[in-house]
Image 1 (cartoon, helix red, strand yellow):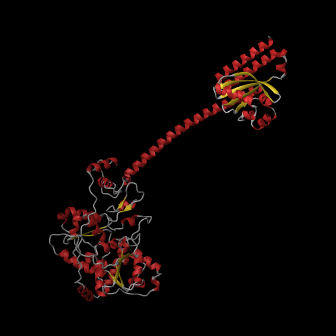
Image 2 (image 1 turned 60 degrees about the vertical axis):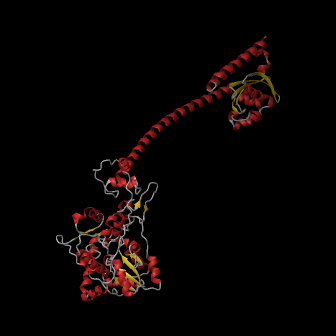
Image 3 (image 1 turned 135 degrees about the horizontal axis):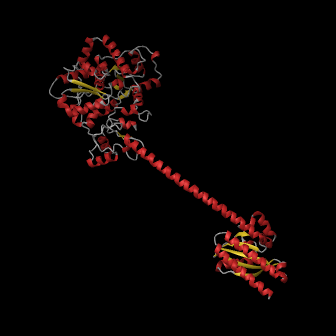
Length: 606
């Protein structure tokens, strides 16, 4: 998001709901600040190289208009005549020195600034500044110097000298110049613009190297002091405009934020300033966004000065004056139109609401300016206008992150507490499970001690528990199943006993009424069956006695049988208690079964 913060006109819009910033091309002035700021090459400008290559392959002659900043771009090339020849090798019919276009424009500026009429002007040599004035300071549009840029002046000269059909490509350090050819060149004298970065790419694609080439000079005419143009004050020196502090009437401002503040100050204090201003968005063209990244301003300036000194020392002054005279008739005038792109002023209440949200209620507090706005109020206005989001405020973002971290900490603490509670609950459940499992095993052990068969089934007649005696009564099939499923747990009672046997269990489940002492026959065995409800209509139990067993057939030992039955019933009662759920109902049922056996015992004795 750094690109959005450095944009001087906030043309990179960060809207709510969009992950990535979007470029508003209507607001963009082509200054290249975003390109320089973006360290991920996430932003690129329009690449003109393919169009230029097609142009060079076409039937028309093409002239290169070379900005004097080229001397700062190629410090590795010791003689300018080498890069002139390198450009020719790309297919250009003419390679011209745009310093001459600067000289032409400088003559017009000298006349404008010397003619004191009480109106003060802003130089219009920097396309980014000119575009910014028209869009965001439209009331100053009439104060833009009505003069074409050196690029267009050079193109007009080339058309006159080499023919109207000659196509022109400007090679320079400026991205905004690409927009300039579309927006402020009604005569369409510049066909394309490529930056020095694009020029290097063309050299690489065509394998053009300095060491393999001879010298070649610019096609005439050549510039003089216009070669100083890459330095911000160069245009003034080329014009011979007095820059002395006490005597001069022009002030220079370059770079961001100095150039922006100069425009703002000029707009609000023109009557007090009472001077023309020479403004460049970058720190001179030597630091333009179309130059290779990471350049050293001092080094580039020194290279430009050395280049200018060599050129000027060899120039034929009479011939240069003659060339200037030849092209004085060129129409270098230019009209600028207001193109107001200022966003509508939001309601003060809305701005105050956003300031309150940002916790920036005190307008007197200084702004950190990290958001790219001069004040917190201006930032709040931009939020209200939909140009940015609140999270672009560094301070607000940090506070939100801190709150988020605190929320996470609180949530973590609550989770830890809940986890501890769950752990305790699991321990309790585990203890209960182990106790229940112990009771269950105990109950099974007790059941296996009962000589009568005992079986417990659910409402689907699935066996939940049975003892050894019951399995023995059923025979070999039951014993085989018991080896696989101990206690026959889960087995279907209907598959193990005849219908008259399990029907007794179904009746008790259906009616809830106990059935005591029902005689049934399984194979050769004659059994006595008592079925009782343990959990109403859900769980029933049954006690099975073999009527052919010696205990039942021998009446002399009927008393012992009664005692055994009493003991068996006592054990069954204990099982009911151990099983937990339905224990009270089981106890009552087992007591009723015990009472029944006592009555039978008394009857047999009588």
